[in-house]
Image (cartoon, rainbow, N blue to C red; front, side):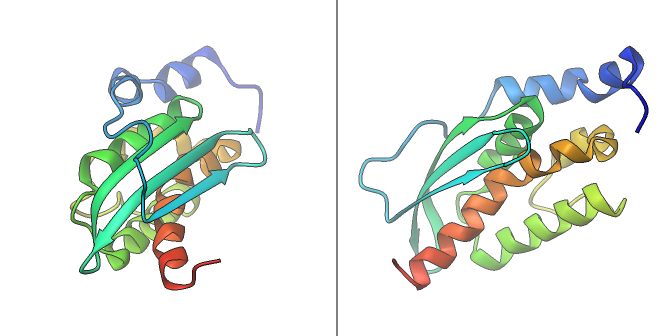
Length: 150
């Protein structure tokens, strides 16, 4: 990829994306969560720690500690708006759809995860894809850890 122009960056960091990044729901940590997962993007060093409780196969409590770039923050914001009440299958589908959206120019992830379209310009920034996927990956791994505790 050639040097990033200021026009490319202006498109990437749109008002919508920055608004999402500035208003992340469900931030912080939970007291005594059923599961806690920390994920790190090795290329950029972004981290997300997810705490959650699950009852009857659905997320009932959720908190996220997000230490990521604006792109990772925006993705965590979208997740935070929709995660309560979601099943493992729904989160895996959202993560997989977001991966295809970013890496293979696939469609925007389907409902109930509206908002990921703000990340459309990030497709060209492959070094940021891992940060964008962190929160969803952590939530999916949380379900996995509940099935097979350490």
